[in-house]
Image (cartoon, rainbow, N blue to C red):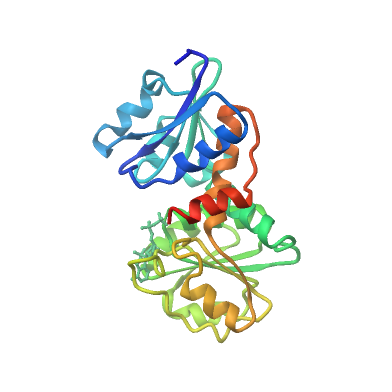
Length: 278
Ligand code: ATR
């Protein structure tokens, strides 16, 4: 392999099931770029050392997945605004002077998906309800605040985790107990599930959608299955729905552009390629 071939990889633990190699591999081929995208297993015990000495890995850049996003961010010399406010990086690279830089594109992935599948979704929208308080919720809350939602309600089984996210972002975010869901749904323009409920092999997300206005858009970060019970019930009562596959695909766009210098598209061929692998 020539020294000019740029190499990137998904790093985290485990990485065997990641679909990122499929996504980036598709774009490398489509654009005729002599690059590589692989998998590097980085267990938590060695993560700090790995990211601090990232130059030794022989990679131009990397994606970072669970459980290493926070450790990677801490190892960076520079972070973009999203990574800084979330305290987590999912995309890293070395700049010309060898400094480790980090970005968080998960929130951009959420926005890119809605922008593509529900254009105008954020016009005159004020109130959003986010279910869950993990890493995906953090990214979604960041994204909604960046599009000027004035009230982002975070509803989670474990209240203190919702409170921690609300404290992290401050103004415009409100943490709620799960029992309060019905009340906040009444004013929602957008409902987002970021919990793992509804994922193949997990319990379904069973919530009463009756207080939700029919004009609200409903979206799910879960993409396997593509049509979750939540999306099916929302569609049946007349709400516009957006599946979560594009969130995964769009978060990869800025990363690919950063490492390989071409801004790729999320096209139907790519969606079908990933769907066939689910
Ligand atoms: P990620 O980083 O991908 O967002 P996570 O940190 O594991 O994933 O978060 C999963 C989310 O799903 C959490 O909000 C979790 O709620 P808790 O904070 O109370 O654990 C939520 N979740 C998982 N199983 C759940 C269940 N059976 N009922 C309600 N919420 C659940």
